[in-house]
Image (cartoon, rainbow, N blue to C red; front, side, top):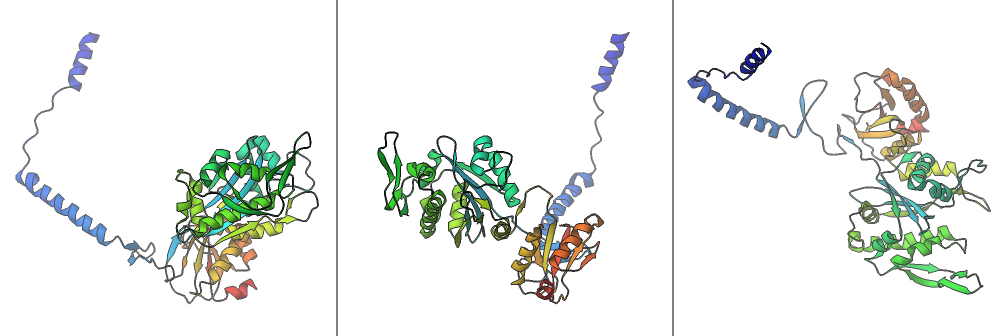
Length: 398
């Protein structure tokens, strides 16, 4: 009985469908023709509307504004391309550290900050490790990066570790990096024999000598020597018609990064430290100012930590944009969108929010910028708040 039921069920599942009736003439010929015409017309509509945008409030189609100086222009910003580059010696010790930041991906240029490996994080540090070298030795690149993020208050696009072999590859397209030593770098063996590592005067550092040059500590001048090396090498790259001609094809992001930084105006910056006879301590006030300059559009140290801002120029005076940007980033916010108002006759500068959940943060930002704050549920939802630059902006800041 059970087998008979199973057999009937199987037969029902696989029962052949009855043959469908032949479609009518209209369905067989007119509908396919209509479908072809409809698809073709849709393609035309899509093509012709490719340079139009839909106004979300009025429902009208508007021509897309692509001129950054024109009223109505808006665009998402690219966060500052940055890179933390650490160098370790053959014993796994941190011997050199820089933070690089690109000023403009298209035009090139940027800054390179020389960070002392011996930098101490706290003057009265009670819990070891307290300096960057020890942190790296204990936890590697991950621990070092985490420490730097806490120190700078921003994240980096990428972290890179350079070893002896990688330095040899990076320097290989040039004959060597020229540096000028005021004094010879001399070591003494266990039996007192004097060993000159690098002679005084103008010398050329080959790729396989970079680690030794960075790691020498007998003269107490490790930071300045590192700076002179980077200064000389980056200048040589910048003097090339195309910096990539003097960089190896290694498939590493640092190669492209260095090419962009050195293809425009570039600055070499020394880490701000407090005066101390024996140790390096960060000058936190100067460091905060430096971070704003290095990272115009910073990556938040913790996702969602910074209030997101849409910066809108309502005056047509674009010299106000960098002033406003610095004020906003200094206040701990993150600019996501930049643009212009629909007209350049805006008189009042203000901070506008649309979500009551961020009212308190908007008020804090407004207080820091010296601007009034208002609620508007129709303001753009692209960011948490919108900062509008009006004719009174300079007066509001003073």
